[in-house]
Amino acid sequence: MRALVILLFILITPVALADRGGIPLTPAFVEETEQNAIVAWNGEEEILILSTNLRASENTTILELLPLPSKPEIKEGDEKSFYELIKLAGMQRKTGLGFGESKGGVEIIFQERIGVHFITVVRINSSQEFAEWFEGFVTKRGYNAKFPESLESLVEDYVRRGYSYFAIDLISVGEDEKSVKPIVYRFKTDKLYYPLKVSSTFKSDTRANVFILAKGIVREEDLRKAGLWRIKISDMYVYLSKSELERIDKSIAEILDGAYLSVAVFYGSTERLKADLEIEELSSPTLLERVAKLVEGTTLSHLILSLKHIKGSGVDPVLLSILIFSTFSGFPAIFYVIYKITRNKFDRKVSILISTLSVAFVAFTKGFLSFLAFFALFFLGIVFVLYVSYRVITR
Image 1 (tube, rainbow, N blue to C red):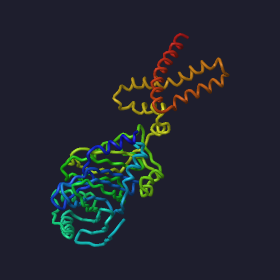
Image 2: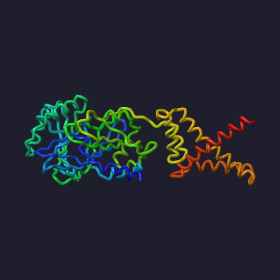
Image 3: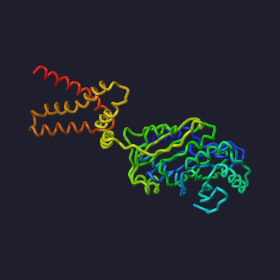
Image 4: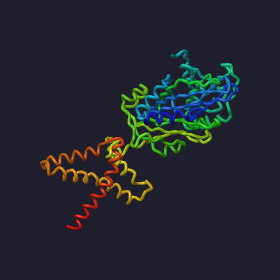
């Protein structure tokens, strides 16, 4: 059910360009009706899988720019990667080759047709040199398009920040929506990176869905800096093993032996995209979260998570502590009641065993019953605390 909810959440909302800047090479309005990304980072190397649906007001060719921190390896991906990732999370042919050409300050280091994509990777020193090279590049392909002035300052900003590699993707689109095969970019980077600012040249509403796989959990404040917000997919964290990562994409399993999953989204005007997602440090689950993960979905996990949310919950900490203490007191209450009932029928050791198993059953029950058990423990705990207090006072 969780998988279906998240998949619907992603698919039913209109999506526009969210990761790349684009230039129509003939007069046309181009929109990217759907875009999803998987970002896998191991601290030194990143794999970025991008999937898009494109549509234009008339037949045209769009040139998309993707700034990168280092020379990438590029291959065709599979849209099944996204469906496999959603399921695991419980949200549940190449032709043509050319490289080594250079002109002025722009060096072509890769050029290849991959499916419907014609991808060129260049390394540049300045936006001015890039703009001059760009005009010659599109002219050779029969187009008379100028490099937009709005992109020059943006490209210069990326170059200044160390993103001197640009992947240029030529895609033919028309009025009918066209699903474009995902592309997998693999490159060296000392920070988790996902480009958003490059899309600010598009004046429209947009949505980006970003699935992040890494050795740690992305912190909320780092997502907010880039204008993203987290989708909660579990009460705890989601961790995928190496074999599960391999089912998503074999190359991800090559750089990660296992990964925590964070899911983030952006929705709004592209003009709000003022920063890229750049993360150098990740957080690790706390001991309390690790324990809760071991018993995920059980009554005990609900109690542990209640402890986690005492701080900063907005509820008076003293009152919340009393409520949680009362609920935890429900366990000795169950033990005491069952022991009293069975003590007259069985040996003392047998009564203790039955009482212990009863407590364990309540603690580790799952599903809807775990919520019923949670509230039952609360009321039993209050009664038990009052009973013990009365016995102590009247003794």
